[in-house]
Image 1: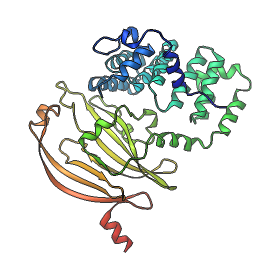
Image 2 (image 1 turned 90 degrees about the horizontal axis):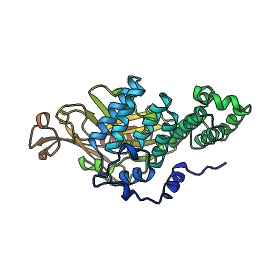
Image 3 (image 1 turned 60 degrees about the horizontal axis):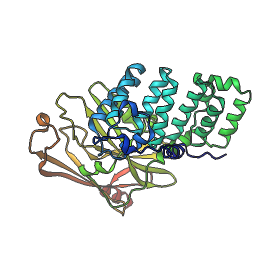
Image 4 (image 1 turned 120 degrees about the vertical axis):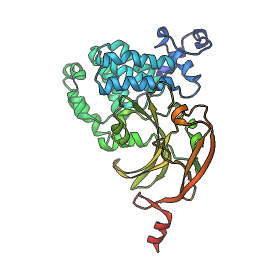
Length: 378
């Protein structure tokens, strides 16, 4: 059975409102609390956002820390809303919905999930599953089952969770054939572990070669955030733990190489440091290139571009069409000391090349310096 993509349905319904978004927005194109769940307003403001809003991102990371690490769902709600008012994003609405669910504000949680879906949240399967839970709590059997089966079709793979999740208790108990229906749905879905991996890997589009990854590349990433539901494939999500001082945002970049044995992908990371003077604003992104096997196990990983720490060299990458991956490390001098003045409005004054290396991806999916690889072939 096929399902209409839910975000498309939301967009269609939103277009029926006779009032235009222009009637609802002032010159600042920001949401108000009253328009937080208004589809037209949310679409309009999101469409007119001028790139990444650093203030919104910092508030979002504080909310995530409070919700996920400190287990304070109620306290995180206001922070998620504050972040959305600064800049509406799919991930912010999704996490707001989760926090509202935990505080049993189910009706508002559904509104938040609707907005996340409208803004094209990924992975859609997890959002649909959470909506199924919300409808089950609300004792709306048909809607709960609809969204649950849709979630499975779109890749939700945790059958054990479906059979044990207390949020789905009502719909399980109300349908004597529930377990057999779920088993049947999963029978046609394939290997659950591979489904989850394919959901993650499928978000990375093939890169058009040659490609240069330097400071300016971050402008092309837009809102391509990686969901925290995929932390099993992004170890840095587990490493940072959204500490009090530093939080990180993660971005899809693209697919470098694909074979029957492995995929090589690139994702970007932006660290947000909590500091009173906003000195971290404008800090360079850094990019990791990772090879995974067919089930998502990491085969190899390297820093491809950018810099993790202030005192590290800055790395620039050029990936050519013939498979060469050239990385060059630089020492960068700025007009002002970044440790005292930050990065914003602080132009480079010079770059000194420190080292240049060329890598290739071998047949095992590992990264080897080209000279070493040639020696092995000989």
